[in-house]
Image 1 (cartoon, rainbow, N blue to C red):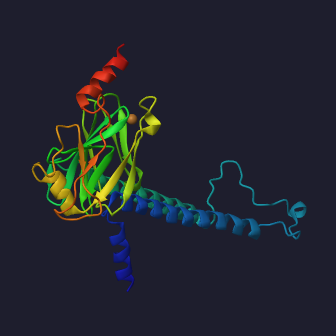
Image 2 (image 1 turned 45 degrees about the horizontal axis):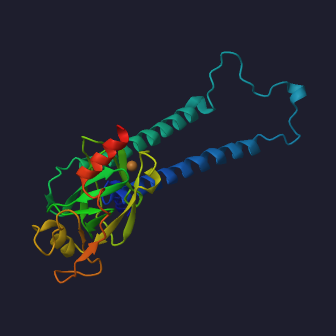
Image 3 (image 1 turned 90 degrees about the vertical axis):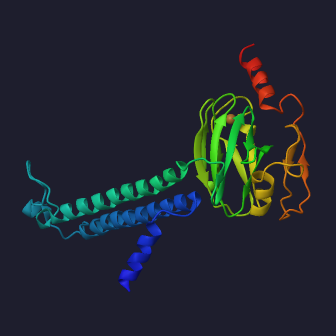
Length: 287
Ligand SMILES: [Cu+2]
């Protein structure tokens, strides 16, 4: 029975699942061990404070011996130093295990980020993210793009490849514990998921100008079949965006191919295309 329980605990410690679950588990383990260490340390201190309290019966003046250490005496902590050795060893084992285990968990996260960023993954998808002052643009495997809202397939793993078209930004989705730099001229890649149905907030985590605090976006989790139709299958008249000025978004509630096509409002001319945006930015940076 005890062996089974131990295996179960060990199984819990093996890094897997979503990033959010993994970081949640790291937090739990640190919280539990921190609580145990705190209770033991404070408890032992209180126990000794009580045990060696002045109860009025100690005759210090008569004997003159209160057990003070003498100069050059090594503290043994009683029992010829066994207590000291034991507490040092236990602390070292706990701290080193925590470091190793956390490192193992982070290797799992890094291994996910290092996966080849192919446009079509076996069970998941890759979305290219471009940050600009002040918003986010998303490009999907079939070349379709959206602005401000990132569509991802429910229950699948999402690889993101992030860059910037102007200054440094940082793309983050707090709910998924995902965050990575958006650097002009470079790409960084990371991952999250499998994602559950819902809407999640995207934020910029790098001070990037006057509109930084408004540089938010939304992750919208949609039906995988709908995602496939809109963003993976080659673009045609039913799923393509019209010359880059109209953004095509899927109907979130519907599944399958019969969903009506919703056209998002365009963001009004000058700032729509990346080229126009770059020109605007250059105008701002080099007047
Ligand atoms: Cu930004």
